[in-house]
Length: 299
Image 1 (spheres, rainbow, N blue to C red):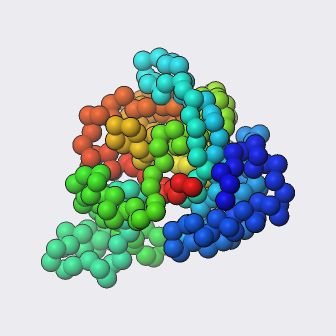
Image 2 (image 1 turned 30 degrees about the vertical axis):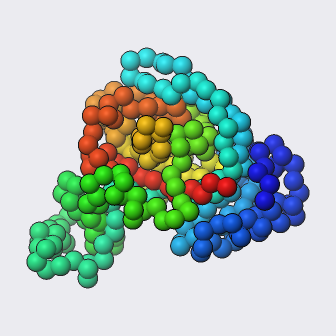
């Protein structure tokens, strides 16, 4: 399959795109299935591309490009990745991120002796009024109707150990360059949607921001022009690769927002080029607590 850039890809016919994507199946890790061709649109940009399925998760084909990334520094609260040109290869990208630090554990897998504290907490939680309960970096309980869902915290001691179970052969994480390209979907504004956070936006964790039914998804969580979903939540970071190791993008663990800096500075960490200036102070398990990740296949 030719390594199409976005411009060339956009000039292909529907038949040419589908033929190229079906050909791609032969080069993917085992288990991928073709689903459909779909057009995604958001913030004035669009992409018609292929959607695949692997172990219950959808992946989209994102053509590569030569792009300008990064932003000049803004002020004391914002460290940004430097302005640079990057060549992005075509990617197959998991549409929605997964929690890196928390995983669901069926109740019948809890051991009466080893997980005694969790089982006791479940019984107390079952009788109480709360919808969720978390014991720091150990377990979390969520109420789902009459059911209680248990999440346990990942016990890996390093990024390398975490990779052994979370990144099967043929899969990797996006680099910072790739992530900024995927998140911004070609935009050169501060955020994927523009340069500002304003009062009309409906934001998670900000009371009174925008108006919508409680069941409606938050706008920042909707698929972008590449068909990819991002948390749009400063309390979360997405795990990406850097030349020196790893970092989290798209948030700051909620430091600005929890620190009372308001919606504008609180949501500044969701800017495309934002880098958390305090991340180096965190141990792996502290970083893992707020991390999400998505798998990619480089083509």
